[in-house]
Image 1 (spheres, rainbow, N blue to C red):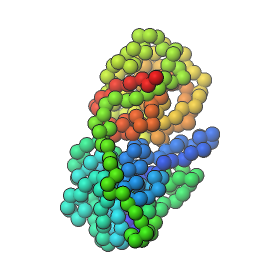
Image 2 (image 1 turned 60 degrees about the vertical axis):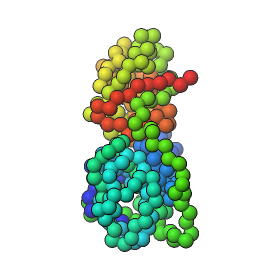
Image 3 (image 1 turned 90 degrees about the vertical axis):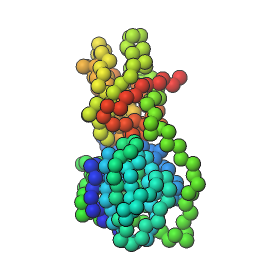
Image 4 (image 1 turned 180 degrees about the vertical axis):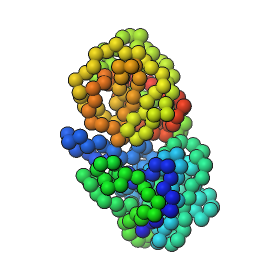
Length: 282
């Protein structure tokens, strides 16, 4: 069992999300940065889809009631175990009553904490991912307790030498494919979309990232159609909206671009006033 002493700004339990329920209007949800979540589980020898804690901008404070192993990846939030700094991307042993806390955000925006065997919260629609309206709680709360899967050290293997590439945390190029309505844009609009630098607005969360600079839009609305995490929509006012993991399943705005899966990981580590450029993959 793990006790939540402080919940942080927006911390939640996430795995790879809900697949196969979009026909019913259920969002995919799941970790915003799949690369980081995969790495922490891999380093511990967990299955890649084991539930982790996703922390946004600020970290949680946790107390452990048993010996176990943990690992952190993604954003670096100056983590401390019993007030001693520990590293990201390294398996760390914790003892009973140890306290994990976080300090200053040094790089990235979202940090992931995995525990040996994974967090064992309620499974709903084949996922433990928290989402408002689907799960009873949609973020961690102070005083809450998290169950973990018991796993003997002697029967586990972890991969401490796994090579981690953190360069994506500072990347600003977002690799994309053409969206279904891309070719309806004028040549000038297409050029601006793919050559301009765009700024992340303060309207950024697990549902979508909005960009400050307008593109200009004279396209007609489309019939409500399927959208995915990574779909870039162009609103009537010319605002660009990049849908993220908790996005709706359909939308009526032209879909001008679609992010590569790895580009969603890059964007998930960006925050207000960071800048990005789109790079079209052939």
